[in-house]
Image 1 (cartoon, rainbow, N blue to C red):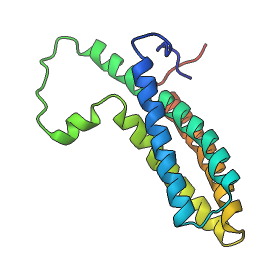
Image 2 (cartoon, rainbow, N blue to C red):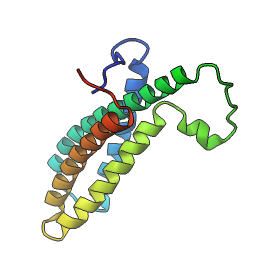
Image 3 (cartoon, one colour):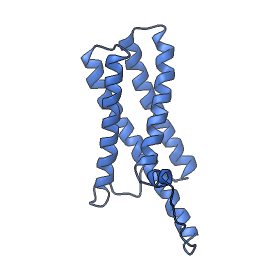
Length: 159
């Protein structure tokens, strides 16, 4: 899990709060979508379960952020004396912002697995149970994907 960054220090608390805010905003839109389009009307399912999913999204985003930062540190150490290239594309500037890529990966994985699992369970169960199961399973799978990114992309070794 995130080893190198001290998240409570004053340097990285802003990034951590932006990640948490992005995950909370994503879950807010997800709750709105669930209430009006998936017709989930139980407030317990709509309020309590997404809190845990928000925390899982936040933790997975932190893991992915740290993995990407570790790869950037390794590349910077290997190519210290290269000329810096000027980036003029707006999309590259947007994706190079520190929190964009981890949140994008987390949201796409979560939405993909949620949609797949919801489509499977909606055929057999009612809307509330299928939302509950798919939200939890998508969060668990997202944590497994974040662990795989950390292990195989960043190659962080835990001792």
